[in-house]
Length: 268
Ligand code: NAI
Ligand code: BGC
Image (cartoon, rainbow, N blue to C red):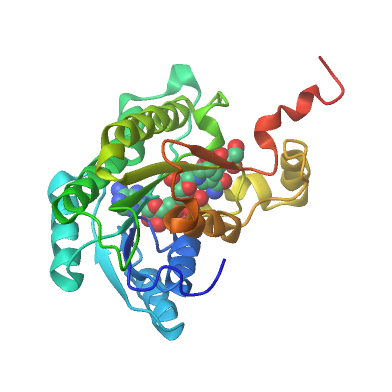
C-alpha cells in the first residue's frame, strides 16, 4: 500500500478511540486522509488518536456522538462537513457485545446491541450516502463518489451461542451492506464489509488475555495467531482506495481462516 494514496480524502471512523477503530483511523491518516475520530466515551483516548494522526502529518478531529441516536449522528456529519466540506470514506466500526444465555437474555440486552451494531451502521451509512449523492465524484480525489466500509464479523456467518443478539446484528449488517451496495452502485458509491475473526481488543479480552484462553482460541484459528487491529486497518485502507475499485457488495473475511471450519480438518 503506497503512502499517500488517500491524500485529500476525508474519512469518518466510528468508535475510533479504541481497538480496531483506532487502528483503522491511524492507518487512514498515514495513507493521507483527514480523519474524524468518533467516540462516545473516553474523550482522552479520542484526543490521543487525533494527536497521533496529526503527528504523522495528516489532520484529525474528535467528535462525540452516540451512533444509535439519529440526532447525534446527523449533528456529527454536519460538524464534519462544516469543517472539511464533505466526506469521502465512512468506516462504520462502532460495536458492542452484551452476552447472555439465550433464555436469560433480556430485551434490553437484545435491543442495545441491535441499536448500536445495526441501527448505528444504518444511520451513519445513510448520512454518508446522502452526502456522496449530493456531491458526486471528485476525480482528483477518487474515481468513486464515496466508500462505505461496514465492520461486520465472522459471526455474520458463524452462529454464536450465548451471543444471539450480536450474531443477529452482524447477520443484519451483511444484508444491509449488500442491499445498500445494490442500490447505490449506479451512483458510483462502493459499499463493502470487513468481517474480522478474533482480533485482540478490549471487546474480547477474556478470549486472549490468559495463556489458557489464548490456547483455546488458537484452536479456532488455522493460521494460528490472534489478529491485530493493524490486520484490519490494512484491509480498510485498501477497500477505501481506488485499488479496490470494482469491488462493491463484498464481505472481506480477515480471520486467519476462522471461517474455514477448522474442526473439520480431521473430522467430518
Ligand atoms: P472495542 O470495544 O475496542 O471498540 C468498540 C468501539 O465502539 C469503542 O470505541 C466504543 O466506545 C465504541 N462504541 C460503542 N458504542 C458506541 C456508540 N453507541 N456510539 C459510538 N461509539 C460506540 O472493540 P473492537 O474489537 O475494536 O470492535 C470494533 C468493531 O469490530 C465492532 O463492530 C466489533 O463488533 C467488530 N469486531 C471485533 C472483533 C474482535 O475480535 N475484536 C471481531 C469481529 C468484529
Ligand atoms: C467478537 C469477538 C470474538 C470474535 C471471534 C468478534 O465479532 O466481537 O469477541 O473474539 O468475533 O469469535
